[in-house]
Length: 123
Image 1 (cartoon, one colour):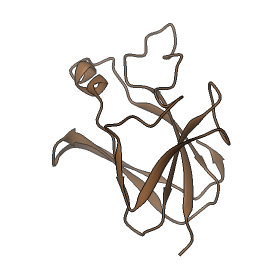
Image 2 (cartoon, rainbow, N blue to C red; image 1 turned 90 degrees about the horizontal axis):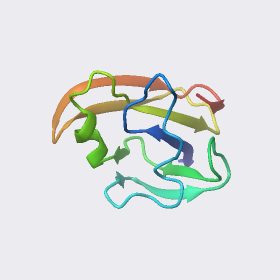
Image 3 (cartoon, one colour; image 1 turned 180 degrees about the horizontal axis):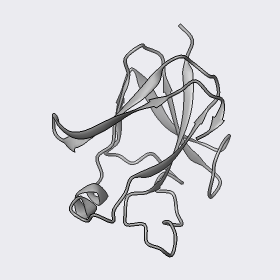
Image 4 (tube, rainbow, N blue to C red; image 1 turned 135 degrees about the vertical axis):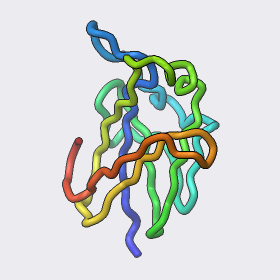
């Protein structure tokens, strides 16, 4: 089975105001210690990036792989209606599959959505 490479660039975990977005990437220099993955690995790469000089790279090699992001920034903005979760995803090889995003606490999902991977480049 070939390894699928996906570059994830997280723009913000905080409020986005009318004045713009957070100007730094929380993964610019290292993989946050509280982020974990099953059936894959996380690293910082300079191959593709949107801001700064690096981004987070997630390589997985199984049909089912999970990336769990735990960050105190989520709880700080969870009850603010103006808060958001924004990211850029770079996909090197189009595949007829999708990522499933789930937001919640522990095993309880509050909301979710599907993101198709049938493209090459940034989305």
